[in-house]
Image (cartoon, rainbow, N blue to C red; front, side):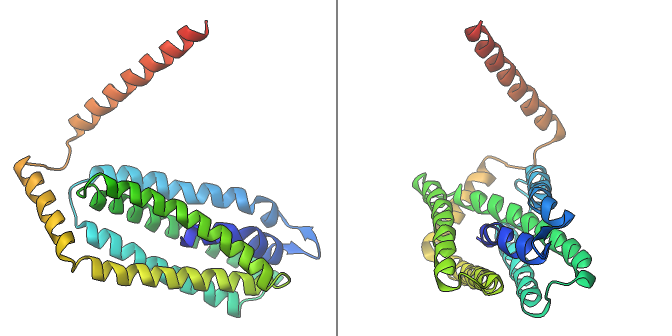
Length: 236
């Protein structure tokens, strides 16, 4: 949610408000959206490989709670910057760098959080992962509704719009953290987690070895090559 909010307000707050001077787009304004696209994907891709290596090791709940806490801290920093730092030539350079660092850290946390959430949901019955996907879709809808709401409430104040976006993001992150505390205390959750843990112990689950990764990569590569050849054969 925090990243959805960020990317929605970015063209207004960062490109127009911060990096455009007297109607003239600076180099920062012209490159900002492309740069944040790259800086957001690098940690996401990196954390995918890290999670592959620690697929069983480590507490999933810690890997869910810690990113929430860090994201709350990052959003608080953004809110402080929105309130106390106004666009000017002296601050533009460091503001740009700090923003990119925040984006990387935020997406690093999001990558850990999302992968860990799917790891937890994997122990639940099959209809629960579908509910998680629906929740992700609702997140996008909520962000769109927020965009309409802020446009109606304050069409001329980009700073106020940004403040609304980030404050709501912080509130939602706090609600997620509180709901996590409630979740781990529910008897049904504990029951499902106990079943999943017993299943992993019975299967003697352990961290995959490098040889297993190579076998998996070889198998997937062969399937991709076979599919590619069949597609090419059908088009000839």
